[in-house]
Length: 147
Image (cartoon, rainbow, N blue to C red; front, side, top):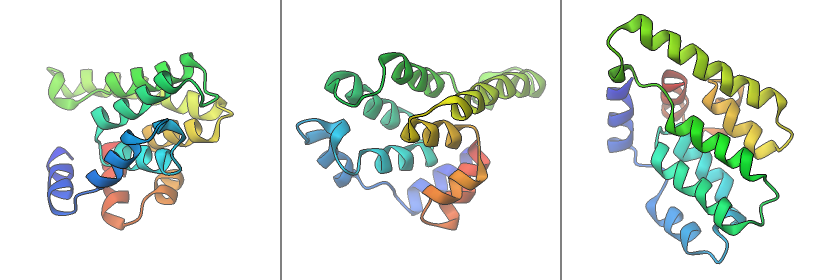
C-alpha cells in the first residue's frame, strides 16, 4: 500500500501545491471555497501532515462553526493512524487498525457537520464516500487501499 501511494504521488502529483498555497495565503484559509475539497484530496492521498495543517487553520480562524473539540478529534485521528511499519506483528497492527477505524466510523455516523462527516467517512474507508470525492480510479484505489 505504501509503495502504491508513493508511486501515485510521484507519477500523478495531487493535490496541486499552487492550490494549497492559495488556500494558505487566504485571509481566513478555512473559509476558502476550495478548503474542504483540498483537505479531502490530501486525506485521500495519505498526505496526513498537510491535512493536519489545514485543520489547524480552523483553530486559528475560529470562524468555521466547528467546535474545537471536533477539530482536535480529526487531528488526533490523523496523528494516530496506525501504520503497519510501527508494529512488531501483523496481529498487533490489525488490532490497533480496527480500533482506529471503528473510531472513525463512529464519528462519521454521529457527526452532523457534512464536511467533517465526509472526512471521517474517508478515514473509515467508506467506499461510497471515497468514490464521491476522488477524481480518478487511481485516487480511489489508493484511498481504498490506505483506509
